[in-house]
Length: 132
Image (tube, rainbow, N blue to C red; front, side, top):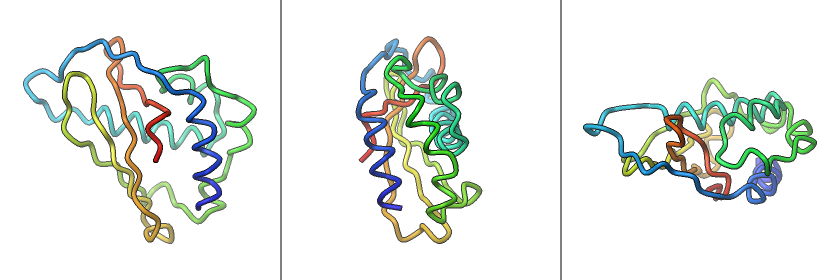
């Protein structure tokens, strides 16, 4: 799992940026859009789908599609069952939030990761530089 995370970190660190529209989550709703955005990213990475990765990140022009393609099946290869992964959204403030990923299953002993998300033009997008 550590080698996969290193590859993902390299891919994602190169694509850091911001783009929040500054909108806060109205009325403190229980919008699970942040968690869904991170789930979409993880699913897209597992599928090796550059188009899907580009669609869910803040800085799509910085995505290296060759690297994304090479990640196809990487989570499964590392023993991660995406059906057992959990995504927990923290407090949403001013159009930003953090999502904590619990890897579950055989990867449950791996530390949880926290990724940052922002609402951009009404959609939740993942900030790549948030991978820890």
